[in-house]
Image 1 (cartoon, rainbow, N blue to C red):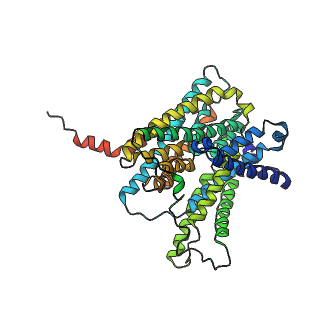
Image 2 (cartoon, one colour; image 1 turned 120 degrees about the vertical axis):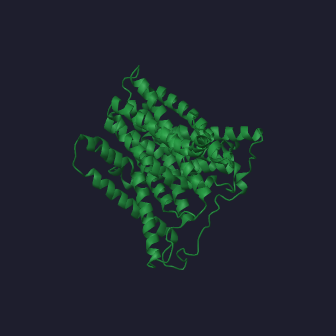
Image 3 (tube, helix red, strand yellow; image 1 turned 30 degrees about the vertical axis):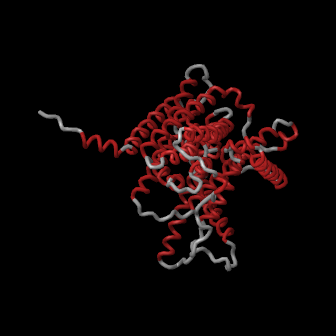
Length: 470
């Protein structure tokens, strides 16, 4: 299967790998210097990783460097970095909170996340279906479903499913299409997020603060139950070991499915889907491992907390930075010439609907901290968690509102509500009929989940309705 070969059987020498990694690291540090020294860039909030990816694209214009940079290796880094970063986040222990109000807010944040994926997918799909049945007959009707993957999930998932659509369903330029959607999403998160903050500041609705004067995170570097520093093994080594063990189990799970015999549906739909969901499988396995640790501590077979939140945060941050750098750098501008119309349309519509929907729902769900909730969720739903945190720090640098906590913990609810939806991604590209069925199913999910989100308002209206008099 081609997608398996693209991401798991990639052939590269150690020399070539060192050259690619050296290019990435040098440009990443150069991008960091540019962001720190150039005032306009610094004020734009564009992440260093995004700047580094753009530098790679500029280098690829030069013939010598274009031959030196391997797009295939950049795609491999993007694919695996998403999974490793997701596993690191999933291994973190969540703070105990018995407050029903806070738990409700976390669940509402998860619902808003899933509902935004849904409306992005429906509108993106309608656009590409409309183009495919009119004057772009060669366009894959289901290609618009990449919009929520690029905007809502980032470079890793956009690449995975863009590659699946390209290799399994003949969507020419699918990988670069997905990576470009993700890159545009990052820019939208930063530019539109900053514009919104400045507008609201002028209106007096928010007080923008200097985020550089605050700590990046309020979490403790260590806890009393951490592995003692006097132990013979370093805490960081333990975190790396845990992450790699989970990813090894993820590999075994994916390899087991890929090795199965089956018909065309299994070969063309199920297997590519499993390969594309490496991050989701890894996240689930990490959560299971975390529960095993809790069970071992209850029966006194384990005394230390081996996962360390601070170190896991640093590892996930590194992985996501590399995902963005490599993801942007892997874009092939030349293959996008015939895809400019759908690219522009779905990104423009995706931006508008994401802004309007997240704005409306955060006003309802988080009345006490609407602005903080909005900028964090909008940043995440057009970029990643990192861009959401970057925007949030501009108005809540000390994370005094629950917005940061909601952003981190909502992923459990988002997975619970959203996993059946992602299964449709492998069904939609089979044909136009299947794409329309998928869009219909996504619409139904959207209506049902919105009814659940507004459950309090709906219940209040029903309660206040007077029965009809005879």
